[in-house]
Image (tube, rainbow, N blue to C red; front, side):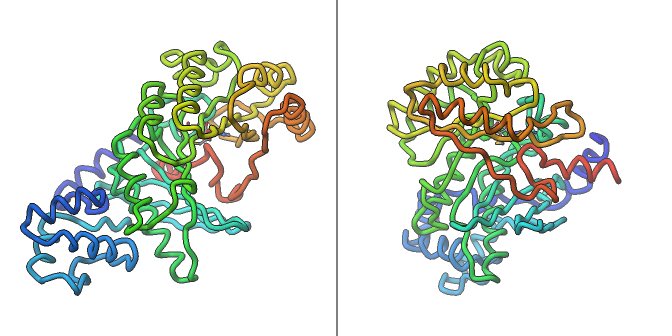
Amino acid sequence: MEHTSVIKRENQQTKSHLPSIYSLTFEQLKNWIIEQGEKPFRATQIYEWLYQKRVTHFSEMTNLPKALREKLSGHFDITTLKTLVKQTSKDGTMKFLFELHDGYSIETVLMRHNYGNSICVTTQVGCRIGCTFCASTLGGLKRHLEAGEIVAQVVKVQKELDEQNERISSIVVMGIGEPFDNYDELIKFLKIVNHAKGLNIGARHITVSTSGIIPKIYQFADEGMQVNFAISLHAPTTELRTKLMPINKAYPLPKLMDAVRYYIEKTGRRVTFEYGLFGGVNDQLEHAEQLAELIKGLKCHVNLIPVNYVPERNYVRTPREQIFAFERALKKHGINVTIRREQGHDIDAACGQLRAKERKEETR
Ligand code: SAH
């Protein structure tokens, strides 16, 4: 498996690769423009071409002087992800497999809700967190994505929606990878998609989820961003959490809860705890009681995720009745709780199942 991707990488090395212009925040682009001796308003024009008109060549930016267009194409690429696979589920969910410039591939999911279209983006090629239930971490981490490669997923899918006159209204950073393991690129990505002159996706319509890299939670709290924040909790005790998520050894639950409390105090915002229900492991009523005790008094919301079956993993589903009983037990304690609606099940687009890359390599 590893071997295949190495060969592929070498083959692609010859292809020239300039920095992606999608990696530049508006301020960075403006500074670059000024350094080139150009007028700052050119940055606005370029952002409009990139994110509102969504062109894929600098030559299309017809209100820019030719010399500037040439300078831009000498310095930057407009990342165009190549669509390798596009699948549509019965419920309208779409899953894309995109190829990056170096031959690696990533997945992006588009979900259709009655309140709008939401996109689930990938932040890394693979993942090194090692959660025992997750398919994304099976092949380890290959590399981080640049901000522009995360932005490009949104632009690319938006271009698909343009044909139907529809708009991406929200983003969840819940695809492959641990966003806080690629922190700087994540923050740039958030600024770029949120910018009023760019895609203009409201911060309150963006959600970032982490497995719990504690120092980054503090840093994130201090960023002053209005985005939604979710923590993959999955267990109410240190012991159980370590069994499910090895990251809990480095960043144990009590310290994680301190960081979460800091986040809530600092931002005044509500956090979401994601709690996957793994049959017979963490889904008993005693776990619900422990969970209620752990988070009582916190400004939070619990999202219960029925486990998605991953062939390489041994976890089984919690029976429906048990899921409802778990939910009731939390509600009894006044906890705000929902059960995640599953989408895209028939195309393996559900949480934790994004693994087409490995599959593709296995069948090569
Ligand atoms: N790395 C980040 C972003 C991934 S978000 C994080 O851990 O939060 C995807 C969510 O799906 C996480 O809460 C993750 O723990 C959960 N997940 C992963 N595999 C799953 C599976 N097989 N069944 C249900 N949820 C799963």
